[in-house]
Image (cartoon, rainbow, N blue to C red; front, side, top):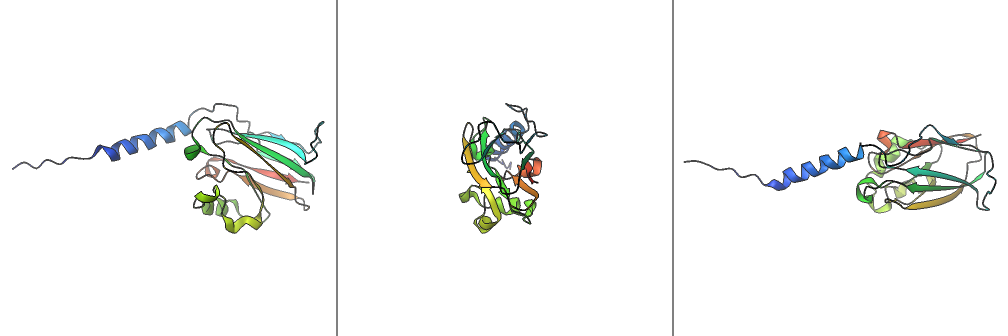
Amino acid sequence: MKTIIRFSRLPLVAIAGLTLLVLAGCGPSSGPADSGKSASAAPASAQPATGRAVEITANDSMKFSLAEIRAKPGEALSVTLKNVGTMPKFSMGHNLVVLAAGLDPVTFVNDAAQAVKTDYVPAKYKTRILASTRLLGPGESDTVTFKAPGMPGHYAFVCSFPGHFQVGMKGELVVE
């Protein structure tokens, strides 16, 4: 008697699809990723009334275009994040979350991975976040306006979408 074992193709197709998705995220960027750049504290010639404008792009290579934002204590900033990638939001969404002093970025992003309903920004950290954009899909942008802390120091900013911080999607707000 011969026993025939039939395997469903669904798990194989799902694994192949996930593998392609991961590999696509590791591919070349659709735009420049100048992670070594910083935005200086020098006032822009056309500074908006709501604060000095800082523009940051995010891409499918999981990089911010700026690794550093420099500001003076108490300076008003209007930070615009634009997702210049092409991958769908559910697999490659981006946000920018500026953390208050003392909030460990690793702890924050680990907890954020469970906060799907709040764009990966856990409600329990609401009072420990200086600013946060919404989660952006390809071609979308969002602007947040806030004041830099009055105390000089280094304040982390991160993309809290699962896995992005761990591959380098982070930077610092340097207040001096």
